[in-house]
Image (cartoon, rainbow, N blue to C red; front, side, top):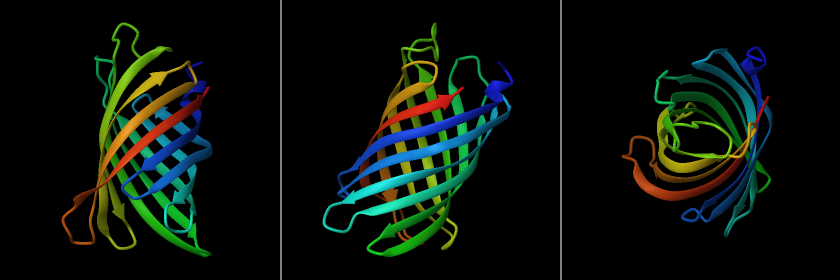
Length: 193
């Protein structure tokens, strides 16, 4: 059983509302792969597809192939303390044009089970919070950062649901980042085995 858990397939389905941007998005992912060479390290390979319903302009499609590394800080409190750094190639198709943005994302986060006695067991709740930075590799600048907090529920061994709020801060190259957006996310996550 331990060998099977060194390779995990993941899939993702989610809905996102960004009322300040007037965008509603549907996220999905074909099965991605997580390889765990050590209990505290993961290698991620996958892709996200996104359909954006844009108020006042043409709707858009996005493809985001990604690869990344996720490291956990071992602890005795049953918390997931992690850093997740990933390269993402964001390709957006809108109004018969395609734009592409290579970027590096770095997220440092914490997930805390609400019940220590049954930490991470099915039918239990957990809280989460993190800060994530988005660095554009083409123009070489910090494009945005997000502060997230949320709650998750473990339905069973393979399914989780999360409700997350993001505060987003953006700014042009060289400009100070300012608060620009609220993002509300409802996610359903699948992990196999």
